[in-house]
Image 1: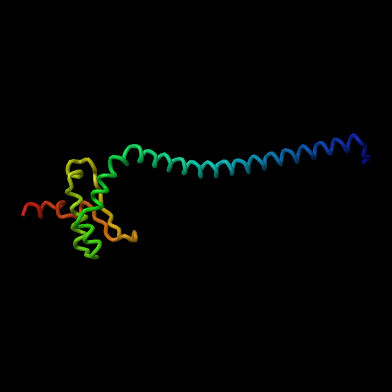
Image 2: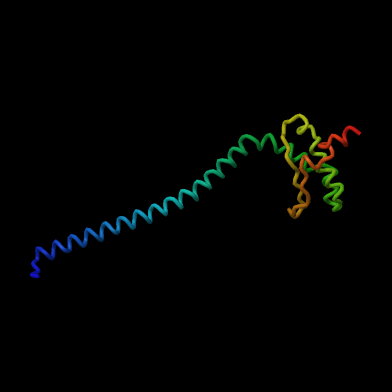
Length: 139
């Protein structure tokens, strides 16, 4: 085969075009992976920011005084200081009959009790309290 400058230039052009197309395909694939990963990371951050903002704007001012009052309950604090589990349980159960829960300002599902080092101590749910069982109340 006889190589002329025209054939060599055409071959270089075809080869350059093939390399350019392969590079564009690789680049679009890499960008697609990058953009999806980046979108997933930022959408999680955006969602958590929006949730925090909603909680702060709508619930913080209303719930902070109530939770602050509950956390300073005399029996609960005394039980935590003395490491008396019975007092902690009584204090946690007393929260279920507080004015805010009875008047349905707060719909309380459970009470989590932590010590001063933020170690989990006790979980009390509505079903665990004596007030939930009608047999105890009617006697």
